[in-house]
Length: 116
Image (cartoon, rainbow, N blue to C red; front, side):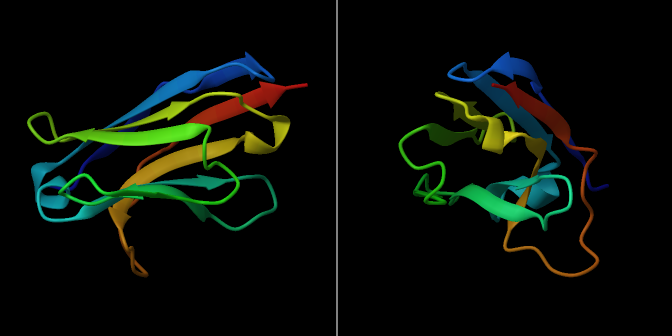
């Protein structure tokens, strides 16, 4: 059974930090690169960061130097450490394998709100 459970979001002031967690089912986690995505109101979902099964990470330019993605293969969990948050980081954050395809399952996401 596919499972993606995101947590750790919240309301934070600009400049603050949050750490997101995502517990994934082994069927997704074990063979795929994993990604953190976000969707702001009125915008398309975008990839924020991805990490391969071997630990190689890539970031969107908008978050480079502020966000760090990591994964714990023993726990089937992927994390997103976010520092120096900006109001434009406000969005619902999702994790999933990377790449994703039409019809793929998505979890409920976790809301991140950054106040100015």
